[in-house]
Image (cartoon, rainbow, N blue to C red; front, side, top):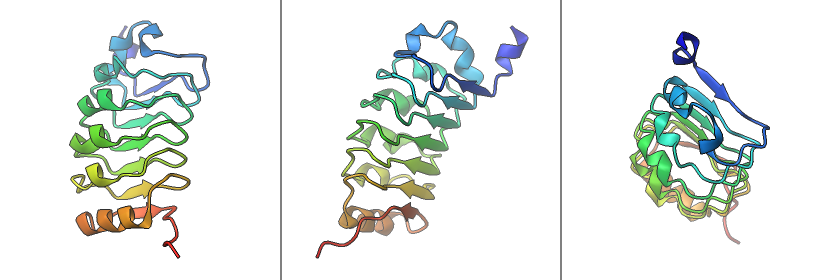
Length: 155
C-alpha cells in the first residue's frame, strides 16, 4: 500500500481500458503526477477527479470527447489530446497552471476558451480545424504562447 501512495506515473497506455471505473483502486491515482491513458479505448473521463495531483495527462489516440471532468484537475501543466474527437475546449478555461496543450488532429476550431490561460506556453494545433484568425486572437491574449502547426492564412 505504501508504494501506491508514492506513485508518480500511472500508465495504462495501449491496454483495452475503456472506462476509468474499470481500474481497480482508482483512488490510488490521487497521487500520480503523470497519467498516461493514451492508445486506449477510454471514452468517459468520469472519476478522473480522483487524480488531484496530476500534472501531466496523456489522452492521445483515445475516444474522449467530453473534457468536462478535467475542469477539476487544476494542477495540470501538460495535456495531450491528439487524435481524439474533442471539439470543445471550454472545460479547460479553469486550468490556470496549464503550460502545454496539444490538440493536433482534433476537431477543435475555437480557441477562445484558452485566452484566460496566461501560463500557456506551447499549443500544438497541427491537423486541427483551428484557423489563422483563432491563432491571432490567442496571441493577442497570450503574447508568450508558441503555437505549433499554425494553419496557413486564407488566400
